Image 1 (cartoon, rainbow, N blue to C red):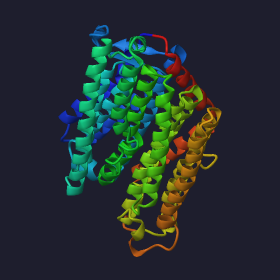
Image 2: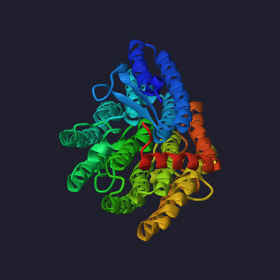
Image 3: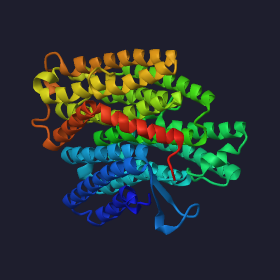
Image 4: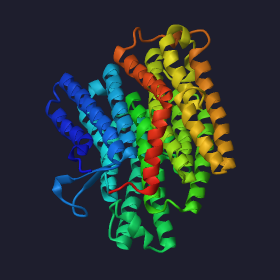
Length: 485
């Protein structure tokens, strides 16, 4: 179905970013522009979810130019899920950042760059060809580097430099692989690639697939390409870290899903390799988390570990596996963003996020304690929370595929995740308050409200697990079968 309006989630934030620059003297005007724009984008994402479920695939050609000369935008159910969750996260985090002040209040460029980042993420989800996926990644890279280094602290600049260097190496490899793909097939349009790839030699097809998976694996921070993440994210402002850890690496995961199901959805050898990578990503990430003493760093290592569950579902190469992974991605983005925002509340209240210097916050900040506890239980996969639903679906799909080892690893890592969440709970919230446990008198309503809204959304996803899984299953069927064009 032709639907020109699906370009709005990428186009509106870019336009709003330009307007935000023009009104840079007024922080209030920038805030209104940002909140209104992201609210509209969220509404458009809801419409895309409804229409893509009804028509399977929505498409448009930017400027009326047909592919391959023009820019093709497309939205199927998988796109719709990612767009909707991303829009809600971006809106919630912006409200949180406004309440927090800090870099948002001090830097005139925060809002324009933030909106540009939104545009890059939405374009990555909507693009119908791999070259414009590369463009979207570059938009995200430039925006994310600026956000990472806001404040100009030495630790931020060092972490940002590592992030940029690794991302640029990935971008160069991406562009090189795109050239090879175009030379071999004559197209980079994802609708044309399945037929074009089928005509290639099997070994060449696998080489191209592995090159793309390597590039997107860096973006997604899978083992052994994750080393840049735990050092980069904790040094950024809380709101920025929440967006990055909760959402940006999932754009890489999304790209892995797209390229795998487009180029070689039947390649079981690569699927097995993905299962091995998934297991190692889970284990290394959770061990890293257990060894840390600072809340943001613990959560950053968990961002690595939980990506393993998503790759687990992809590696199965079944409808059940993909559906479970899509469901897991959606709920995880909400849960992980919430946990980072809660970590920011702890730092705001106690002046630090180091577990050796925070104690007894459940007595002084019971609301913050509950805002942490609920998503923490979900991340660990404790029933009846949304994380349990996603992990149960993954385990069920793994058992159906007789992938016993990866199922056992995923269950063991879930237990270790619970232990590391308990480490934060007992270290920061239980016990008697320490003298530095109360620094801030009253936490900003916008910060608490935005975090609470995400907790409610997470609970709602658990309550609506049946319909959400049904939608994810239809998305998985389209991915494997190829949605009509």
